[in-house]
Image (tube, rainbow, N blue to C red; front, top):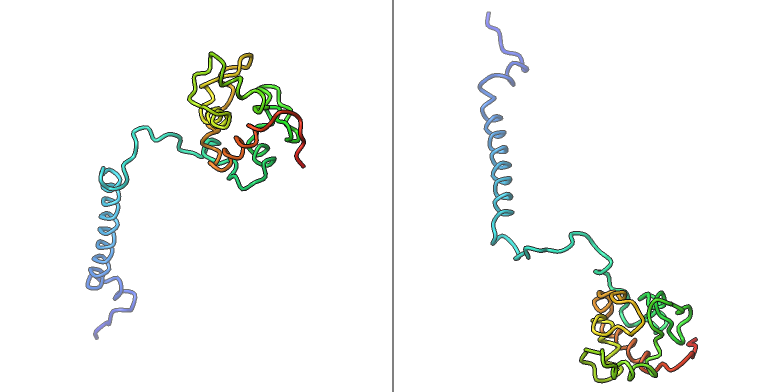
Length: 179
């Protein structure tokens, strides 16, 4: 009498295991090759863009976020930029700041350009306003604290917004409220 192997003994017999093992070994080998390739790519200097040895911040910071585009109204440009927190600006509601100078540059701009301590390159009040935002340390109005104006404002305003700010401020001579 001859006994035939049961179905369960056939599937676990040594005759059927090598193809399964071969497939597992192949899959494991491919995974290992992929892992090694990935590690090699990460270590290779030619694997991607050149990265500065001082890459800067690795997270999003306030300095990286533009404040305004310049498409906003002049009131929105000043307000969203935070200028009213430190400056009193004629015509801008809520702009009653006490930290920075009054921004009536239609009156004070020429005086600031003529000040003996002014070391900037601006020749007009318009240029002075732009310079004061982009590089505020060039001239600090006497009587106000040094290094109070954030140096990153120039990078946070679009060129259009900065031009609108300069155009507005170079004509300010008093308290005209914009509606």
